[in-house]
Image 1 (cartoon, rainbow over the protein chains, first blue to last red):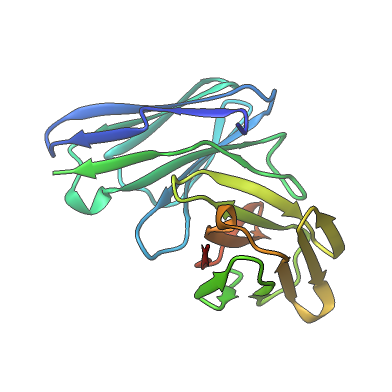
Image 2: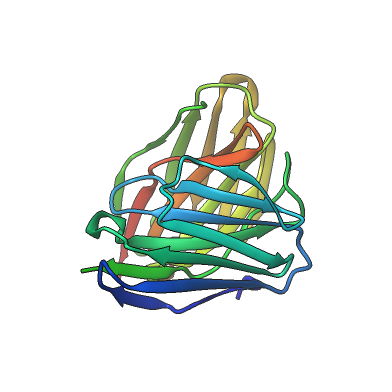
Length: 114
Length: 107
């Protein structure tokens, strides 16, 4: 148990569906992250939030929409996804954004887009 | 950005064996972390080690920052050590991950 909880664990959706991934951290951290892990590829950083403010968006398509209502919760809203978006989506948190901070991950949501 | 290369890409071990995983990086860094991803996808932070040597049970890690590499040692491997080991380095206020080493420990 890392203190970062993600739901759902698995998600299957059609290309026209709208769904949301949820992440909650119980560590009192101020920075939260979304990563995408595709088969045979390194983890890719998607979004970074620091004190509820989005500070980084790594050229992610607009069909992915993040939301950070408070420092403990992070959402990733999905709509009109493509089959190539199928991947493991990982949430992480750290005490703050910046150098020398340890990263703690959730268990991920395995997403399949049909 | 910083390039992170891990070797070997795959490693098969007999239970009880020792092994060394390597991470090379292309520029000086202030933050280097090793992670283990178990077969169910959970990523666990093993070490925060921008330089020097640390030990945690059967695992230890050494980073030689001046030569831009880090090593992860697994001693007396167990089947629960199976999974993917990632090295990640700080790159412009974010972590860049290597492609990982997939370790399979056979009973």
